[in-house]
Figure: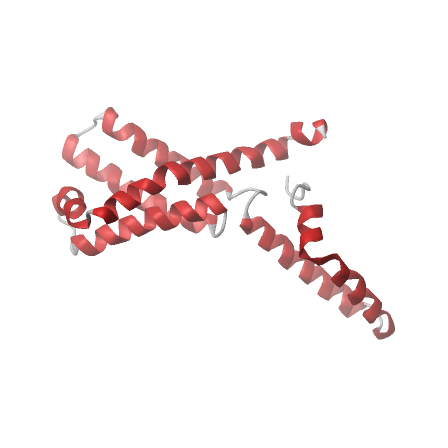
Length: 182
């Protein structure tokens, strides 16, 4: 047990889980605040940048923060969620620079969100995510099809029965904490 916890892969995956969940959790309220008063957000943040369709872009910003945060938290389509957040935060950083110059007090939180989302987008969600579970299930189905196509027809029934006995729960239990990536 101790050797599993001390491995580099386990530590990396745990760090990515913590980064994803905390980033998503602390960022999600910004999207809900935008939705609470979309006109005010558009007037204060989008119109000063002279962007077209300020209300529409305000909704895009709010939904990308909310949706992207949920995707990070649950680990589903994680890179897509992280890229949505990177896009929104990039515009927020640009807004802060245009309206206030290089004010570190305004930029520090935005830069932390940007760094976190960019790191997740570049490294992926790690093993402790729904993305990884889906990939493992698809890989096992692909391997199962490969085995079935190479086995003689008389043995094919036996192989199918063995693989279907395990079920999804046993598959997740056996593989969710196993180390398949380096």
